Length: 295
Image (tube, helix red, strand yellow):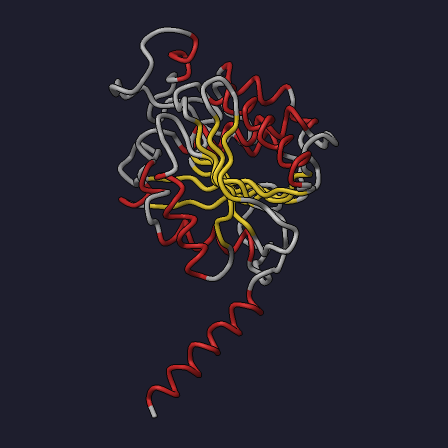
């Protein structure tokens, strides 16, 4: 008797999943950050798969020379397919990431006939996703941008924690140019301190694809640093001033406490996984949550 009940319960859960999530063939690209790999993407992707919202279909390795190695495929019949992108030179920096991402997206358009894309980026991967869209706008050579979920993006500086994986020479060294409570967001929404990497984005703000919908997730440890330990809330929230009046929807989500640490935001973080999955694929995602640009 209980066996039959369990079968009924399982079927009911599957039916609920079918009605809860969109059935779209729009792929979602996941992109990791500095000195990272596919490992930083797997927990978020696994959570989406367990929920029944989406499934991984392709892995793209970007070699240090820019050549692409593709495993898996994308077909028109696939529902909410996920593409994991791995930068084999994971210390090339976010600007180079964005140029390689352009190459990836052109390939998806030309070879796999992908006409629309969602993006998920963490840390420098988040910056790269934003810069990529500012560079390309609605360029017909790449898929049209649909939704962007950016996590812990250092749009206006990274905290100089003197970590061993920070560059000690070259132009990338200058990106570690922030400190706790050094910067803040003014009443106008503009950051008080504007670093060169932020100016690069701001100059291109009018190019951003207007139809895009953006969820900006950031962390606050609650320890007085107003940061996730690597990126300050001011740096993460500075994105709002760039996108204001240039996107159809922009929303912020603050993860708070110990699990809001920079790397912990992608490491099986239940709150992040939940809102990411809902934003990208849930039919009933509410647009009237707290949003900097819509208050």
